[in-house]
Image (cartoon, rainbow, N blue to C red; front, side):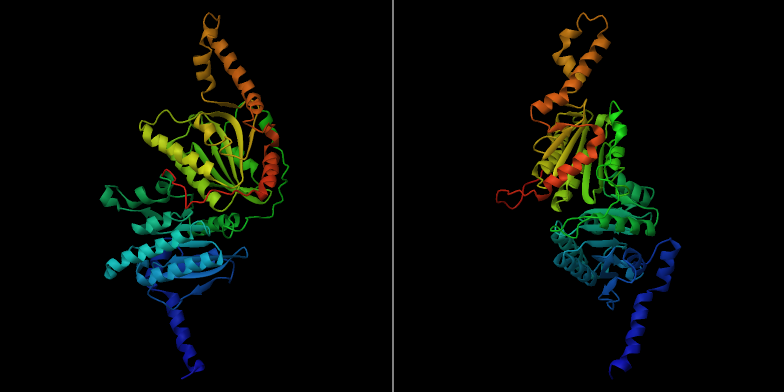
Length: 484
């Protein structure tokens, strides 16, 4: 018996493995979902995906590598048509192997989650399998970018594994949870674990209506990420790096930091992350002049951009990701300081510490624009010399321990006494403070220049060009203790 005589048997076995369980495949189709191999085919460039360990038919996972826009990417996709994608020893071996290959070769890794849970017949070995997958993902963290795609059930320990990855994308069929609906007393799993619920809880960065849309988001996200922590993310763009934002010279106050962030970035490059979680803090990934940057901005239209527990956590995690891969960071500060609505002051202090630590500890290129009020922690964490290499301010912006209203009330109360129109006098004093603050901050060396808002994009681009060769020599230590 040789090659020719055995080839038909191998081909037949491969066809059988690739076909999967007919009933399970139909169930996927009836739900509007793609199968694991169809998802990988759609994710990668045409005919580029190469499957690894393809004949390991009972693992419940498909692994391999291919290209996305010509760049190498590794991936694993749990296969619900094989033993319900249950996680056991064989699956862990395949997933850990592909993640380790991605780390060794310096390429991003994408995990597609769709599993009924642990392989119960393996008992404690199934728990060990989850732990080995988590360990592989932890080892790759900060070395190569990782993306989790939740496109079906992702419960228990699997949910934790997905959360260990840098970004989480969920399709409409995705369900991310630790405990089931009955355990927590919910009417349905979608109520507590669907994409909308996960986004609002901060567990999802991007959501899609279908498998195809989710896979398209993953492809775009990969295009904005470097291959690994030693590479730079660059893309071609036709957008003029010196494009001016004339409309912002005509406003009195910034109303929407999200719109500003998108206009600062190259056309069609912006991807807002976790949009429905802590809307007072906006995080956007995109590019300026083809160079990938991350933008963190406080939203003045939501409670004056005040910092909250969730907002600080959202921004701090994004900042740590950007720093891990030396992606430049731009902060847009328009904040009245810490929220006054949080009753647990210790928790609020810890959240502020997380944000302040993350930005102060970062060694990537950092540019800050004070485009409104930068009050208290809003300045210290987002726009201070500790948080940025270059700081610009817009005319009329204000850097202060207190808001203009509080300053006038505390420091200029005597000027209001006896005024014919106290309200008009208060407004006059507040405007005088705002008018003087940006220039006074420049005189004090707190900001590098007071710039015209129209020139913001080109000023950021120039600063990033200057900071391109930035190198920071830190004291020898294993790591800092982030106040989690």
